Length: 482
Image (cartoon, rainbow, N blue to C red; front, side, top):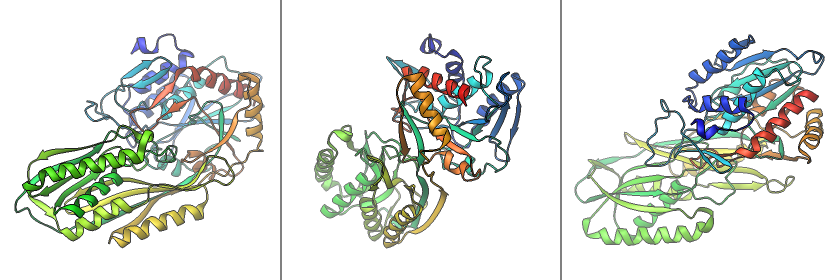
């Protein structure tokens, strides 16, 4: 790993990123990462405190001569999305991320990299220990459990921070400043299915795989396939051609990720084996044509498996498969104000079956509260038509852009001065902690930025190495000018 990180600047940032990469830090499992941050604060003799759920605040005095500067807080989240490719041997509870350097890109070996938000946390730690940056008084906020629903930020108390400026280091696109984001809501549906003993037949596992997946907000408009919906299409097509029963349907892994893989175990008469293969092949060809270059890696495969003891009733199979094929996934509306920005969307995220119960998770996003709720009602209506019970969880607010705020103008000026170009102001179709925390601190001015990271929340996640030094130069230059 030392060779991977060799000659990268700034050394302190990369050193902390390497250390964080060696620490398992799935959402809700950030204890060791928290200990690492607290140890750095102790080593540096800095004041630190933790709230009731484990978010950490560290305070660092101003450098001599900058005591009168406006206080700013640098914020990042400690957890990471844990996704891996099929066949990759990796335990996210115990194993370090295996870093791979590929030209100008840093990635992981078959797993998510954790640059979201490990590189932002590493930058904050590097500022914490720096004795060269002429900054004013600073606070550092390290939150937990961002990826599973911004729950660390949601439970962070008001009144603990003193800063006027909130600098979120969770941005993912160089040359941009994020000044707004979508709010979100989870819609979860459950229903029981009647089961009976399997009498006879052959059992097959139908698997959809090879898709790109990606972030359910940022990547929702890229035309990528949804493995759960595709599997529903396969099952619905098969049931129109031949009698078959279903024993299990499972797919997706995270609410905030577009599902890359899904599978179903089906039982049918052995005499229909060749017909099964033909129909599945035909659906694969049709879906490949639909997706085109957006998601060229699609595979729909068949594997003979042991005959299950029980299968679903036919009526339940028809309703669940039809629901999966019909539930909306993707963009619902584009922004009328920001070109190319998704305004409202929904993600069909996961399906799982256990002990005769089917559970389906979805998420809706919009910066407009009424639009977010309307999307959730639409999804709920479709679920209820298929006899599912519906619950809403994890709602969080959006962040209204304030392009004329002092912090935005300062960031624009500093970016042009240090990096030679005016940054693009953008809003993000994803949840950022800025909106959740900012709601508790009226008057605090918010902004988000970071180095260039692509394909977050998927094993294709990678960090553009050459974007890190400019990110660091801008961050430190901004702190010196606030």
